[in-house]
Image 1 (tube, rainbow, N blue to C red):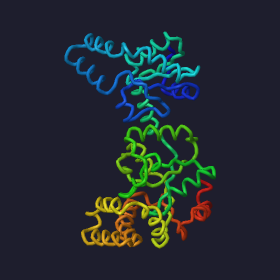
Image 2 (cartoon, rainbow, N blue to C red):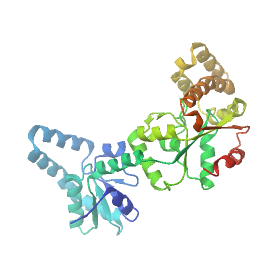
Image 3 (cartoon, one colour):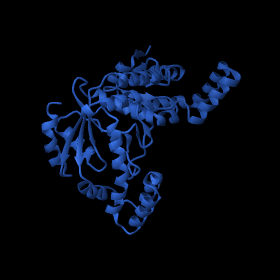
Image 4 (cartoon, one colour):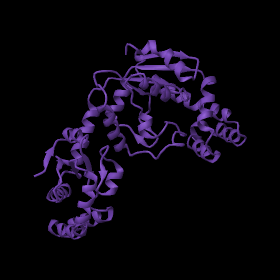
Length: 341
């Protein structure tokens, strides 16, 4: 019989094993355990057909249909699994730790492979993820208006040994209407949580963890509410950097993209800019006056950021004026304010 593991033990065992996710490709693509390999028992269409059969004709007929589908796949599965295993144990899971993972485990164990199962399946793993994000996390927030270079500062802090989670990196988005440009497609909110959970597991939860100040949504990703509430309640080091330093940075980051893409991004904040500012931004864009475009959009973003900052506990906000966008100089300037954090 395959060894059955709790979600924590299953994840720990993955360091010396190979995780196989036997859910459908669609389930896997939506969200999965980090490091798991998609090894579907049914295609999306096959899973839908079995589900429909179950509802209309009952469990027995659905099982018969399922067996007729998987029969021709048994030998290829064993061959593929042996190639993936390379002598390591196979850690198998489906949605609830039921028939799909149990059947696959039986097959692969019968073929002589070492197999372990996740008790409760992916659903139990998700319960662990959400519970972890509810627990107290010692967050400290790096704040600053758009174009302050906060992500670069955090990554430099990480190089210097500070505990950092790059939320925008996990979300594949920089947070503004322009934030998707040049980045990979965004994960689902569920998979964002899975990656966040994985990041937290690598850190010491007794020591400060630095994150960037964010609204609850980062592009199309919505942050877990319990985690977001902790972020909003955490102390903030607010870097007050004048627009004269931020504008060249924004031009450097975004002017490389086609004007059509930039125009589409400006369209997203048309109402917030107001008709006159919107038209002026488009005109400046057409003429290649990128710094003017950035200055117009900053009028909205700076106002919105400061409004959000004012909703926090003001006693938890530490302001620090910075007169540079050089990351090394920025970090040196803030080190005296964070070394005791």
